[in-house]
Image (cartoon, rainbow, N blue to C red; front, side, top):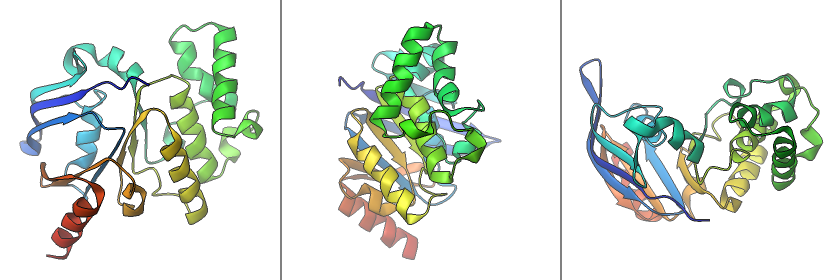
Length: 229
C-alpha cells in the first residue's frame, strides 16, 4: 500500500490561552508509529491534528500535499480514527449496518457497500458479528467493530487513540495482533508500552513538545526515566 507522507510544519495549538502543542515539526513516513507521554502532555491533540479533528492555531499539517485546514473532508477519507471508547463510535443498531454507515454517506452504491462490509468482516475474522445488535457486544467486540467501520472506508492511515485502555488482557492481545497485521499505516497513542515493541518509530510528547523521537527501546527508556524523575 502506498502510504501518504504526513508533515507538521511549526505547528502550535492554543486552547484557552495555553499552548497544548508548541512549535512541533515532524515528517512521518513509517508504517508503525507510536505516540506516548503523560496525561495532558499533548499526545491526543497531536493525533487529532493528523486528520483535521483539530486544526493548528499556527503552522500547517499536510497529508501528502493536502493541508488539513483546507482539505479536512478529503483527508478524513484517507486518515481513519479509532477512538478510545468504541461505544462512542458505533452508531447503528446492527453491526453490519454500522460498518456500512460511513460508506453510505460517501454515496457508495448498495452492492459495493455490501461487498466492502463482507470483505472487512472476513479480514478481521468477525463475520459471526454481522447480524448482532451493537449494544450486546463485549468491549473487545465493540473495538473490532469500530476498527471494521474504519477499514471499510479504505483509508491509508489509521490513528488509534489509546485503543486497549478498556480491554482485558485477552482482548488487548487480540487487538494488538490486528494492528500488527494491517496494511495501512497505524499511528497509536498509548500507555500500553508493550504494544510498541516492534514499531518503526516512537514519539515521546512532554509538555506539548516532542522530547524524544526514535526507535521503541530508547523512546520507552526515555519516557520511563522522565516519569520517575
